[in-house]
Length: 555
Ligand code: NAD
Image 1 (tube, rainbow, N blue to C red):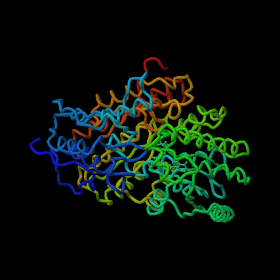
Image 2: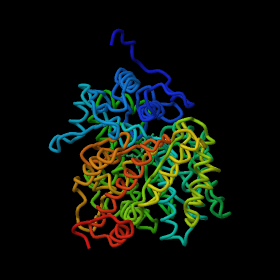
Image 3: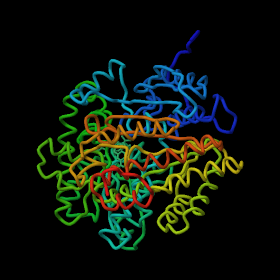
């Protein structure tokens, strides 16, 4: 470029309205969603390009951000932009049914797939951590995870407490980008929930968005409020400013056994994501910078004590589960032999949904107009009138979810229904009832991830670590014509532990996108159904049969 402006942190917000600054809605959607990921109402640390999940970034540097935006603005409808770990590296002539952007983030050759090597390469400016939806530009704030967390707590309630968490105490930690959904999702299920958070600013963000009801620095005060709520059968969420490695053992010492215990600190990253106890946040930051090895020793020891307290609560009768942050592995490696007595949330609560092709389907109003989402909420209820759980979710979401950044909605839809809904959205756009919509999903989905400590833990056929399915998902979405397709390493549970793919597709009201929506939203969950059928899950085989998915070797 002739004169590149100095690149540095600045306020980013996606444009609103229906005037294009790119050459088509697919490019415009990619640009707006990249910007939306960095909107201060959405991102956890926008100045550092960090969207959520420890250090999950949207672009490698501010210069890379500017170059991506420039490339998208000039990208033709028959071209594809190639992004390598948050940096735009090439534009190629493809065709109008091909993705406009393909992205690969944080991938390393398996032998080198360690945090140490990753950080070394990151420091050289060669890679970035993409998490799941940070580097693939489809993070929608904490709402994205509220639905999944709501579904999980609802499954816990069904399996253990007769369908409701009213009068029950849930204890957890971590109120970050994902973890911040816990108080709201738990209270939506009727619970009293104590959420321990070491960083007061994070807790304040959850209070400001009404995801959490109250905060205190005082454990006695928190327990007082929660006990009263439990006795009254009222839902209440309390953020306690403190360190989980101190507070949970203290609860054990006092004989306080919650009904449910879990955790969402960023324990997948012991340097950036988990704060050791016995020191202030500021001192932790100094230690992290000056002596990373000492920091990791302290944070690991703290996480081990934290998990020991969870195990003791479980022994005393609490329903304990790991919420996908790898804290069991950290504790196990530090010598907590029974760490895996705590089950993962996927095999326990989510896999039955995956077998039906269900997963976190989300959509965003590119116009920025909240009325567009209101209309789509009605569309869901019109299309699926018999799904009571879906109806309850949409009703509660309309009441309780405050939009962050561009207005968005999420719900879990299964095989067949995703394509039906996507096409119906495109028809609404075509009729001019709403502006263009972008549809995407988390990488935590039925067919898009290999993650033996989370999504693929305890597979029926032992195929937990087989990563072919995630690669096939990305290839299939590319072949089917998604608007952008991504392949990442290390999301959720950290470097070395997962490989996963994402797809995003735009409903711009055209017949061309209608055909692509039908294909992508059929095939994307379809390979998940095939993956679970191949592993021997009966309900997946039945879902494939019902939906006409051809499985050459499964009868
Ligand atoms: P985040 O980094 O935004 O937030 C983590 C929070 O934990 C921060 O607010 C931090 O201050 C707090 N914290 C760290 N150490 C603590 C301690 N010792 N005591 C109390 N609080 C502490 O991360 P996030 O996006 O909220 O994700 C949390 C974890 O959940 C990550 O490991 C992520 O990979 C995982 N995750 C789970 C799911 C899921 O579906 N269950 C999905 C995505 C991510």
